[in-house]
Length: 169
Image (cartoon, rainbow, N blue to C red; front, side, top):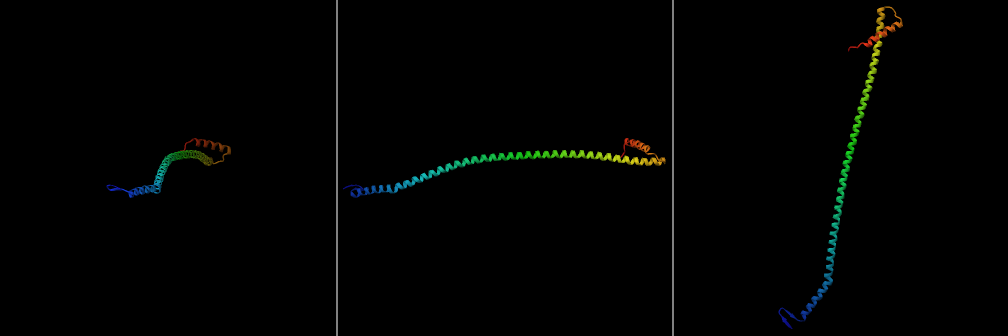
């Protein structure tokens, strides 16, 4: 046997190398391969999770853009609805004001017509009263009876004169 310093070359050394090689093959088959498979499966799982996360992030971004687009459209639609409601309210308000003015004008015209009718009635009543008083005064002055035709002529002449005169208030 050869001695070469620290390591001796003998059968024990050969068996140790052989045992180490067999142990390596056994560990490779029963430990390294399953551990490598577990590591590779874990790497694949992590990779898939990252891909899913990226896909979900992209979808979320797409939905976010879509949501903001719909939100903008809803805001514009809301503004349009408010503007339309405001225009309708203004239009109704203007129509109501116009109708109220027309109604006031009609009532004013009716009131003026009623006043004119009442005025004519009052004037006619006053004329009747005046004619009665004139006949009474004339009969007292004349102290005799005047026939009806003469009476009517006198009264009509008096009414015409009174009707033309202006009353002072």
